[in-house]
Image (tube, rainbow, N blue to C red; front, side):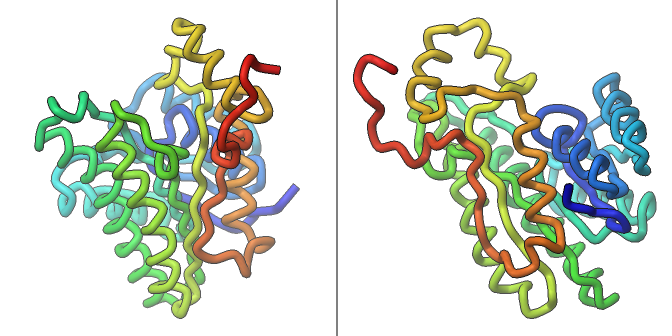
Length: 262
C-alpha cells in the first residue's frame, strides 16, 4: 500500500460519500486527516471514528463553502490551519447539485453552484498555496470533478458546467503552481453509490440503463475512489501534474454500447 505517513490532509465535504471514502483511504495510508462538513453530525462522527480506528489522527472543522466565497473560504482555511498547522494535502471535494431544467434555472441556483463547485476550490487552493510557498512546502492539491465534466446531461446544465470548469482548473492551476513545487491533479468519479445517489435503488430501470452504458457493468460504492486519491497525493505520483483520473468503469471511453446488453 502507498504510504502517506507524515502527511496531513484537509478533505472538504468529507462526512459522507466520495469525500469520506477518500478521508478513510488517507487514514489507512497513514495520513492525519481533517474532516470537514457544514455541521457536526452522526455522519461526521462516524467518519472521524473510522479514520481513528485506522490508527491515524482525525479532527473535524465546520463551514459552509456554498456561502459568500471570501468569507466561507477564509473561515475554512483559518479553522483548518488552527486545527492542523501541518496540512500539506488539500482535497477539494465539497460540491453539490442545485439544478432545475435549464429553462427554469435561476441565477441564484447557478451562482450557488459556481460558488461551491468552482470558486471555493479555486480560492481555497490559493490560500493554501500561498502558505506552502511561504514555508517552502511542496503541497499537493486534488480536485474532485465528475464524469459530468466530460459527458453532458440535459437536466444538469449548471452542475455539468461547474465540473467542466473543475477539469480546466486542474490544468491551469497545475501550470501556475508547479514552479512552486505544488502538484495539482484531479479525480472524476462516474456514477457511484453515495447518500446523494440513493435513487439508484429506487429507479431500477435507470440504474440498469447506466450499468449497460458502463463497460464493466458496475455501479460501485464510493470507496472505489479512495486508492486513486491516495496515489495522486503520494510521492509515487511525484511526476504526475495536471491530470484528471476518471474512475468510471470505462463509461467515458465507450462511444456506443452494444444494442440489447451483454
